[in-house]
Image 1: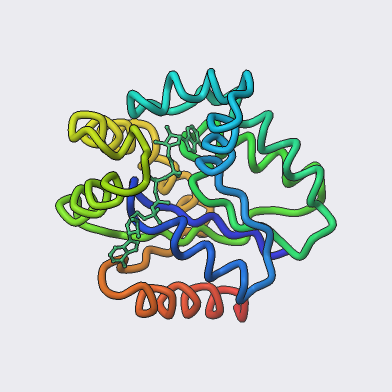
Image 2 (image 1 turned 90 degrees about the horizontal axis):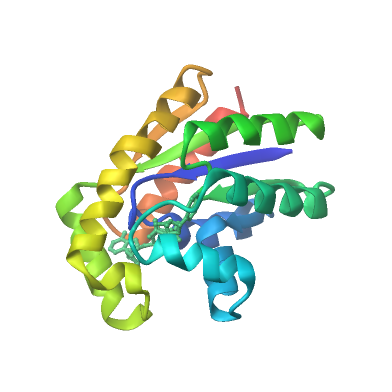
Length: 193
Ligand code: B4P
């Protein structure tokens, strides 16, 4: 299986690039953010819980997120591979993902990380907030809190995969197509090794 973690801070373009990557590599897309938003929209118990964290710019607790990912992997384990978009976001999630994949005799192939300046990120999120209806994009304090949480809890996940020699950073500024080309180059050069 080709299992790729698409990593980066809020607004880095993970969702945008995932949509293109799944088509090119025929992979299954798991965006934990999308699954939470679907549950929020449908007012499920998971949605009510997730909303109480997301609207403040906090992370949904690891146990809840990991159980959701576990179910998703079980349902799709016969596919060619996964793009994990926005997951793992903590070291505990990274460790859980490694365990879940090992149970299915597979592993994380690589992490590709979109590297984008914070000023550009804030600009993109505020712009998206004008049309997305997402409460977490509308308030600058919430956006700043998401960056703080990213630095404290999520950035260390890059080190976790770097230590396993699976990390590749990709410049995430420029047009969507330019960035896509950089990502595919990083992925293709890794799978040819
Ligand atoms: P996510 O849904 O993962 O979203 P994100 O980080 O805000 O955005 P992404 O990087 O996907 O950006 P996008 O392509 O849309 O997370 C939302 C929340 O859910 C989290 O804060 C957290 O609370 C919760 N959550 C999710 N996963 C979790 C987990 N594993 N554990 C715990 N909690 C979790 O791009 C952003 C904008 O930029 C778009 O408007 C896009 O059009 C624009 N854009 C993209 N590429 C561009 C480019 N090249 N140039 C200019 N604009 C660009």
